[in-house]
Image (tube, rainbow, N blue to C red; front, side, top):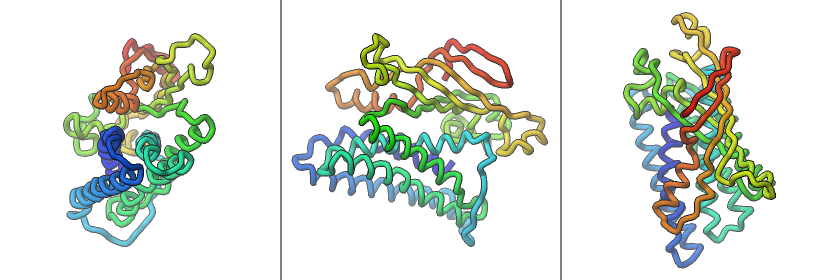
Length: 292
């Protein structure tokens, strides 16, 4: 959750910075501003996180923690989603500087993974958690997905997106799954779905397939009131995986000269908007007219 909150803050704060750096006269000045404002924002966030989560419980000897079998790996997909979209944001910032496009691609990917590394290290010293190599792998996978597509196609044809709906499980364990919408967005993995949104037109540019219409493949989990399978069974819940297939809307094809609208579209393109989908779970298919 700590890494998720940091990533969420960075996603939105840096998204607004993407189109706010266009008024500088020199590319060197743009890079300096990005480093300055980004450093201030990141440092402030890390200070707030350290005060909120680590001050009371303190720190102890560094240790490793294997949480790969928790939450049906939905949390790990969340890490991948975060670094992927951080890479997209950082690339939009860096490509407006003096850096070459290739360097901007590599730096945006590397920095996105490094931004979350201090949180993982702090977890390693926390008495309640530990350093999770699974989180590091998931973080690297996200930035790697961005890097690979830029090097291969010079564009993002397969985007990672997120959707959320409130569930009836959060009130059962508000301390773990969140108390109210703001906390549940981060804590309740039952309501989170992560999507691979495929730009069909980009793969078949000569076809008449609509540019704005993507095919989406989703993944989520349900009946998770605790982290591990055995804990859920002991609590009377049989958690299970959910797979989805549906359509998605590609907002990047919408053209506008308004900066505020560009920001909203850029952020919106990280979210899978409500749309029809087919769910496969527990060996059964279920249709959703509007799933989010």
